[in-house]
Image 1: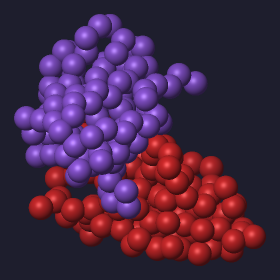
Image 2: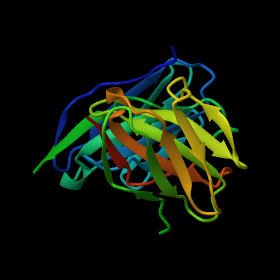
Image 3: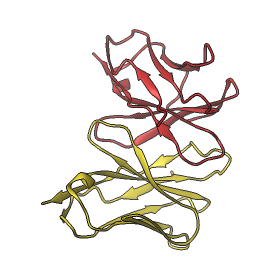
Image 4: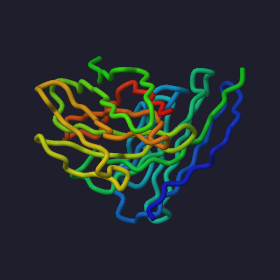
Length: 113
Length: 113
């Protein structure tokens, strides 16, 4: 059974601090990795994608990928109360099927003023 | 920004009844998907649809489920005889196919009583 694992949280982060989220995946052939944000009762919203080992930065978000360790992480800098949400790690193993994603259960982030 | 539209937002049905969930994907998108999320659980892939046929489906997508694109705009998910365990949020999604960004609709909350 191929799995995507995340700590469920909640991860409590003071406003202005860095939130660090982790995700591990079991399928070595996974090729594409995504972080989605999901507010309670809402649909997932893509915030970052990463395909190669290393770091990728987009505004206050940085994704890190280590395929050898089967590990992907997300850093949120200068955390804001509006960042309070559940962050879903998602993995795709087939670049011919971009939309078929395997999701983790999500990490709940709570940013406290 | 264009969006995926889902109707209804809430659907209550009796066990054993048929339900049809409707989606209007973004107009220039070619790939369509259904995902579901049982309360408190992971977002799960159900099915992908391209060129008027199913391209992939998960183990969840058994004979009780079917999808259809009856015209040029709508994409539907039919559950033939609903069970209690079908209660979930159902998300429709679409993408261009050559781009990793998956656009999710706002979801239909299905409650089977």
